[in-house]
Length: 119
Image (tube, one colour):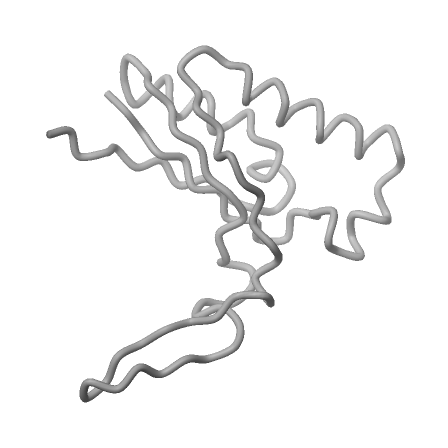
């Protein structure tokens, strides 16, 4: 089964945040190393791009056939998507175990594990 793991940053520090600067160099290196380990896990296809902060988003809606845009994310910044990866796993338990190793999950964020529709 293939799963997408959606990384919701929540309060987890990112290199764009003031909280990141409060981490020691060793803590920052440990976060980078943990993500690198996740990306090298067999079955993982990491996203090939890095998302800019949620504040850089433009939200698009269509109402009465008119395209409306709003600067910034539609959701609150704490709920914003920070990244994603694909994981081909034997079962949901394996995907949950991988999600538990993603640094954002233990630093104030959350990981949404969602199976892909296979056609």
